Length: 416
Image (cartoon, rainbow, N blue to C red):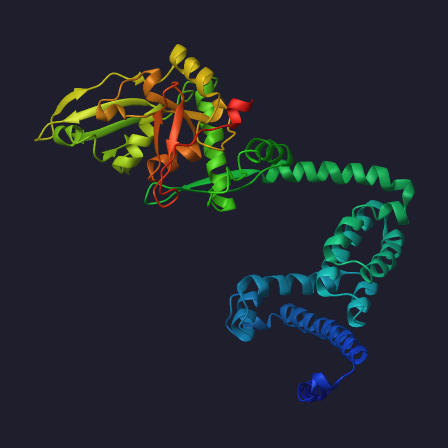
């Protein structure tokens, strides 16, 4: 084998010295096809060698903890690539001879082999060896026309072609198995970072996945031409808005049911300097901008400390915009009042035009509805908001956007 591989290496090196530009187009295509077939045949040889080394325990004999680790070091592979190589070698070794022959002939690639082997295993469990062997031929024929992804989709109904009498029962069994696996594997992991952020990872079962997509997809669309958020940032903000809606709805268990409660701790001097930075009862430090933004439509419990740290006052919890006042605000603004935004009232916070920390009143004349995105945007940009002569909100753009700073209004809600 070593001699043949050495000869092949010399032949390949010779191809590298050939000028591709001198070939006619049909010769280029033929050369590409031949290269692809050779690549798959070499993959079959490589997998055979990996399987033999793994079976002999050569890696551990040479001091490695596993064949995967040994391959990573020997071939300078990523650990994921090395693991898939070992797994595919084992899969190919256990697969019917027809699968190995197809790869050795260069008529399928390694990803198609992975799909064919898994599909044939399922067929074997459902209908036995004879039908599984028949399935190999059908799948190899399909592999000449379809890539691995399409082949996987076709493979879900392979029994319709090779064993129609058991196809329906097998499909039902497969669905039950998928449902059981989805139920078993479902999880969400919430990891708290050192700076107070959370990392979310997990797998949702199909039902939960559908619910999540239904909830956040409409909220993940750009809000207008000036929305510069990435798709990931829009999904993040959409998830936050869904949580705000759930909290505002008042139907959660006793642990929730209200917008975020902030226990803002600051010095007396800091409070007189328009609230300043604060801290949540969880210990997380917040900038003054974050505190002021969250305070717009949240339950606030201020804790005021004197110069030596003693508690001077612990304020009573109070919701800033609720009940009849919020209903009046909804009737007036009909949704997010920022120009061009179509977010409905249930997705909106009540923003104080003059912040309550600056002495602003909790009144219809000092409030405006804003969706989560535009609420943050207003707090972190040079836009400003005011009520026009007719009592409806209008937004003044920054100078860089409009040198004349002509006020703009939301026409979407007026039309509807």
